Image (tube, rainbow, N blue to C red; front, side, top):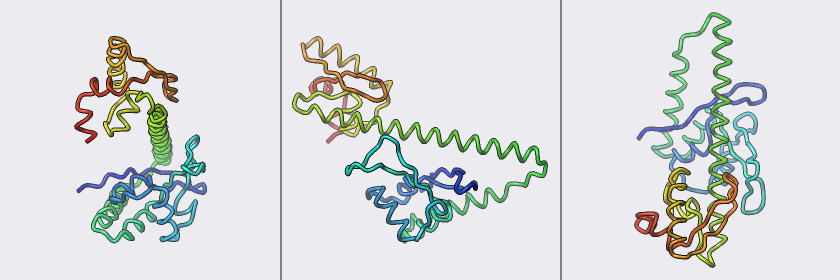
Length: 229
């Protein structure tokens, strides 16, 4: 089984350090426990030092069940290797070997002697790191928005109305926004044909979006019942 963990350079105490996303590390180790509790447990168990072995980033606008700000954890590669080995599993050894292989590959690259080229490479590396971080933040915002859509869908159980995206999330069907929009038009047409109410739900991505009766969604979303079972 291959390992797929993104390694990115991040500023820690004024120094560029190679890090990995704690969520990716947890997933590759095959851990299914609550992420935040797992990350905190690894930090305590390995005696990791904040802003040295890891960084903790607050997620704006996202709160835990207790109303506290959620955080993401990014571990320095040495710390990630330590966490992998502490798992005591074969998969943990594979993850550690992956990090070692990445380090060997980086060291094998010939040194750049020209200072101008070296400076350019450094700048491009920084730009790439920033773009990767922006991409990560965009993905995180999309994840938060999908969670909000699910929550909004759950707020209307009394009349069994859901948004297309919210209902897909509730029953575990992967769906992109383009597909949701196409299916939404079909749901709207079928709802009007049957005289069913089309509701409105607030969505942080698109403003107000329509919600439809569950009977319409079950008919328009093919295979829903089979996938949800």
